[in-house]
Picture 1 (cartoon, one colour):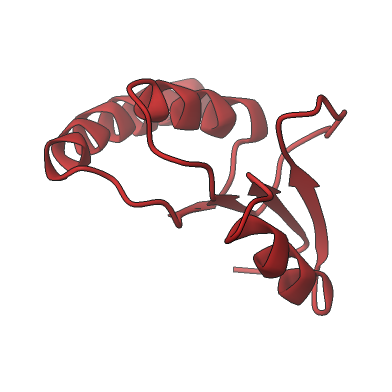
Picture 2 (picture 1 turned 120 degrees about the vertical axis):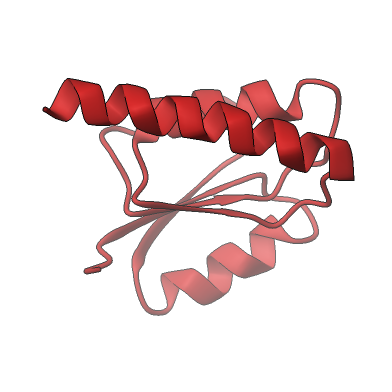
Length: 101
């Protein structure tokens, strides 16, 4: 997979230093609580914001918006939410495949 664009969402204790490192090698942008215009799709999406009750929905919204080839979740996720993520992401993948075909 060729990597051109990387997006780090959440610029706290994990996201900010991660963005600094990634920017040394790739074109990378960071997105935090303050609104910022980020256009188009990205190759890699790093999710670095704290877990809350809307974590899965918020992460899926970012995935739909930026269409990453790879999403890396750097946040701690509850075990029960991991299963929920699997189901939601499988559905998202099926919809994407149907739209491509």
